[in-house]
Image 1 (cartoon, rainbow, N blue to C red):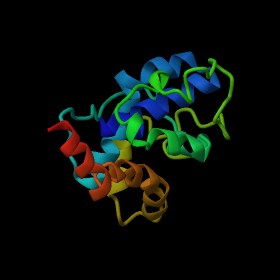
Image 2: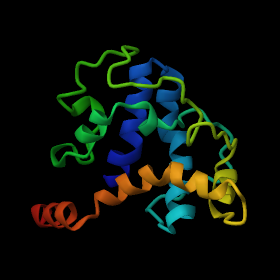
Image 3: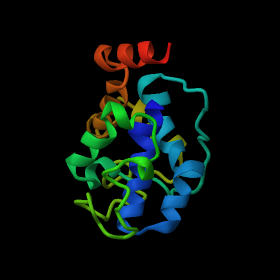
Image 4: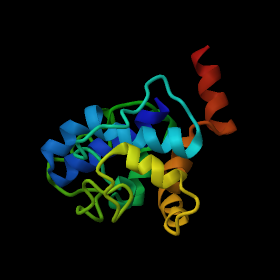
Length: 167
């Protein structure tokens, strides 16, 4: 549910709001591979599903947190929104396809992060892991908000409360 709230649903919402139907439909089968690579190669985390490092279809990826208004994170990070699809959240229910609501930059499709197109998730993994590269530090800084937002769901305040609520 943390992955959904930090990656899948905000990405799908971004594409919905900018009116990119193809990318919207490609988030779950393809876009998630780039986001999983960030967690796997960047943080050493393994989720119950592994990335396809050889996925050849960049549709469904975007630097969506740079493209969305900050208010979108406030909504997705709210405890009541945890793990829910964006269409089930009151603030997003009436956002029409292609309306541009909650979007500050609609031009970031297939860039993860902004200005970076790696073609394959494996190339993103290599770039993240290549600390000898002059661009590695900048790439990691650009991806840091994604890791931080995902990690926020494991903070003491958030995680312990959710853990106790589900017992």
